[in-house]
Image 1 (cartoon, rainbow, N blue to C red):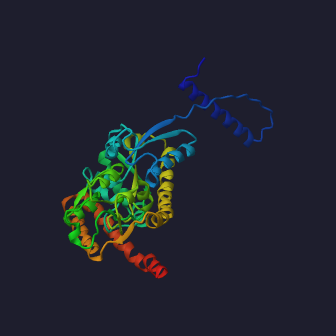
Image 2: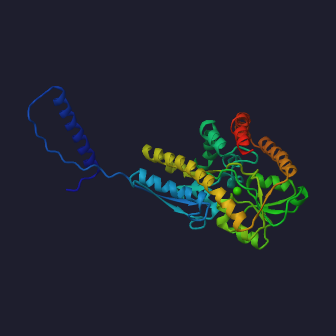
Image 3: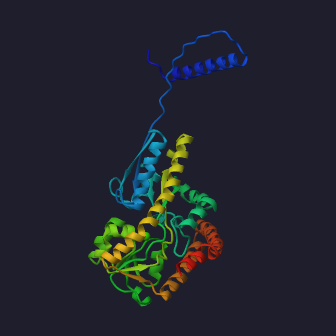
Length: 375
Ligand code: CA
């Protein structure tokens, strides 16, 4: 007779009883030779097959590989109990449909950047990064050890989403331009793809910010639909071929000092997972969060040399007075946004306090050291 669930439970109980008898015999020093034949099949572990949608092209180097690596690690660490299939932007949902897909539960998981969702949750931007904000190490520290993660989960809770940090690009570049930026006047009327608060800063400085997914940027730049675009940094920008569509490559990436990526999980699906799978997912994401940053740090410098030496790209520093003005505007916008929204204010206060404290320390540690080393 086939053994149903109840029968399996009974077998497990019987096995426990048998083991207890053996233990008692051992403890009591009983030397009687008792033979008990026992054969039991353990119930099969429930398996999970999840779908993960991303805001990135499939297998895109760096950030696009974060969900792939998480999926591989989870499958290996769970010994196949959990299998996650990763879909690139547009395969199942558009790049900017990831948040809604996870929120609604049509997909269990997503991978993206929080600042894409500023229209839904304005405070989400802090969990990617804000202009003149925290670097990669600093945002990791704020998130994991400074109260940021708790705030992030509070911000996403109304959307039924459980977020986990999952990758970081490091400090980005300001981006690709077809005209020189010599003063603030050159920003006026500039149509640039730049998301998040960086876009708001550009707008207040007289520019026209545009939000487009990565896959559309090359064509938009080449055809003149936009005058400029930021994307990530040399490693990623080289793969998109921006060097064929724009002449100047400007730094620093004041708008994205250390952008953190996010693994999104539908809260109901997360709640229903056994604890060990939750630990596996959190651990895999934590490993990949660091791994992606390491990859960027290792590859960016090589890619920059190739862009300049092989492709003849003109590397330019944004004029100091333009950076200074962007900084003033960015601070104004952050303060104004905080005054308009209680949740934004709560997150901003935490972020700001952490930034002030960590900046003061880094001034006499990392910043001072790097200055001394590079001089
Ligand atoms: Ca960017």
